Image (cartoon, rainbow over all chains, first blue to last red):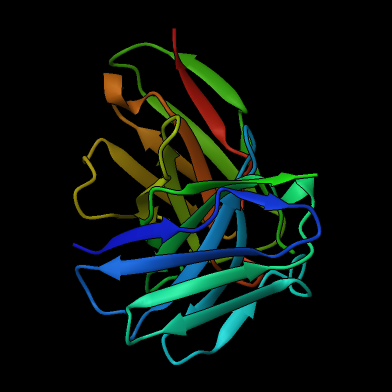
Length: 117
Length: 107
């Protein structure tokens, strides 16, 4: 059973960079796609982007200029960086495994990141 | 971007009821659709992928159907643990997008 766990600061200052990591256990990060998804408080889900274990990426165009997703296979981890954050980036951030039909079959518990002014 | 529209936005139902949710895509997506259940404070849980394939471990009272632009998720007999918010997600093209959700409440 694959398990994902997000980690990182819960508070980020406006205009700074949000940085989160996702540690994968119970399976190898290799040969799969991995994704970040966010959910503002009380709102719906927004796909941020995904990365293949080899390092190839695909980002949501709405965030592409500010997003970097990277992978560290030696640590079985992948990471998210979102630059120049504003209050609109306040959300619960989830990491997830991408299944064969681009469904999200395993999710982390989520971590709330608040952007403060 | 492909827009996903769910209806209704909320619904009230009783234990044992049969409930159907609808998800419409702004353009054809074949069978590239997934359904999720989310309870307050928890991560979404995958229920259905490929429009009609039941994820391992999900009770058989959940079923999905549809293709192209119109999809449905049906719960055949509501159980207490089913009261939650349900989201659809298209996987046909990038960016991957979700519907706004349907909240299922107890009547």
